[in-house]
Image 1 (cartoon, helix red, strand yellow):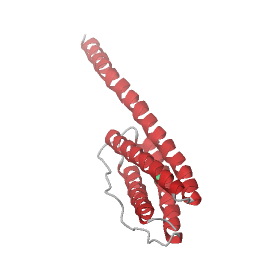
Image 2 (tube, rainbow, N blue to C red):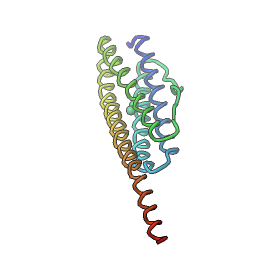
Image 3 (cartoon, rainbow, N blue to C red):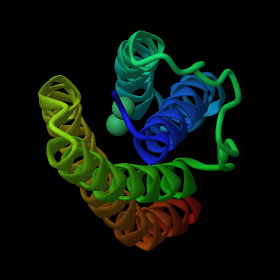
Length: 166
Ligand SMILES: [Fe+2]
Ligand SMILES: [Fe+2]
């Protein structure tokens, strides 16, 4: 049977999955600006994957004789896309570290199924981490290019006005 420690860690994992499933879905709802369409779609799809993780882990806790928590860890939506992605990168990093601990403990206890399940979930979290990191870089580069273009456009408009006055 699973140790008390492992059941506690599994419940902490559920709390995290509930947190990010709400966090990402609300970011999808709240994101605004030029990156809303591209990044918002990723938030929504990832939120659904996280809810599936929560369900799978809850099924496992139930099977192991525990009671799955209903309480999400603290939810941090953020205000603008960059802050959202930074918060999400951090959440994924924490999940990756924690799930590696769960795999190690489950293996130590001979709980092959839990270890196997978390290997699959870990793979998803690493993919999310990669995706959020890439979006942060790409959108960041796009925003920087836009900012660099702005003074040029302003100068071009000013030149246009000067010419028109002549
Ligand atoms: Fe997850
Ligand atoms: Fe994730």
